[in-house]
Length: 393
Image (cartoon, rainbow, N blue to C red; front, top):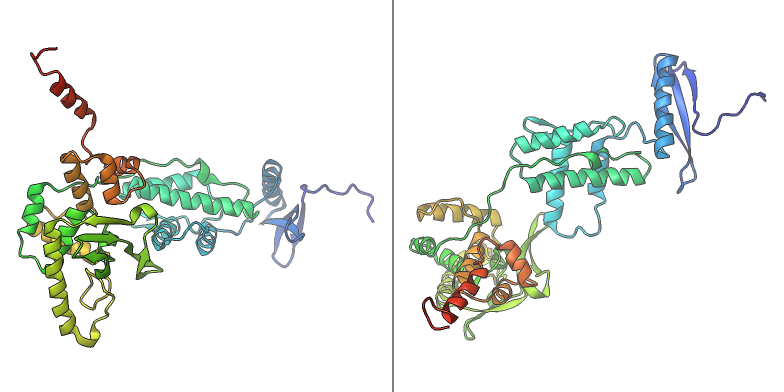
């Protein structure tokens, strides 16, 4: 046995590998806390001096971070691993879709913006992440999309750190660009709603638009509405379920919160439109015969099952264009129209919150703040009534 001093863990060693015709540096970083297996990190170079320099970099990383990340792990690997083993809090199919899209932007990029999926974690720099985000911002992606993209990268790298695959998380240092400004949701005016309802609408669309504007249901609540929840005799609509996407498929699911479950009095126009839609659907069901899937849906598709939300979106835009009110409208904005009409009529904010199924009025103010009338102005109205100009004090 040699009488020389034994190298301490973290010093490493350099040797020539004849089978690979290169110099190899090996750094022992201790045992894996879970498997107790010895963990070593390797570097290679054509010359001994270059190999020593690379080994010095490993030593510096080990002394600074207490570990050394693997040199062969790529961004794509850690992002794919995170998406394959998502957090338990991810329950909505929409959440999975959002972050899968974010993963594609990170790894593959978009037109004109290169992805960073092939970059190893050892070489990934803050500048790489900044350039990706800046490119996405230039491509017109909204600030929310950029936040989701950066969040996925940060969480993926954080998991890699915990697993000893990386010693750093450069995404934590990246700066989030402003991103494109998304158009705020709007409310239709009374005149615009009248123009839309003045069209030669099918019973389906007349009932859909009338119920959306005058009852304030969410788009998913409308498409998932069942005849059993429409009580014509009592004149009410019971909102209990909503149409959703589950693993890419259309489904009907219970509402998330107790506050979302509500019973709404039907305006007369809604009751009339509902009755016409029920008659029209009965005829459509008879014509479809065995092809009809009877799920008891008010706003069913031609086969009796749920309509795709994007199809409704496209068709609504076309109707708005025909009505001369512009086609840049979304189904959710009928709900904003409902809130705006109630606010303009001086309905109490708490009652509006109950009508739209919010947990409290703070949520209503936050979501629909541009539709809620400025309640501060009410104080001036009261003071004018109490103390009219020129009146006795």
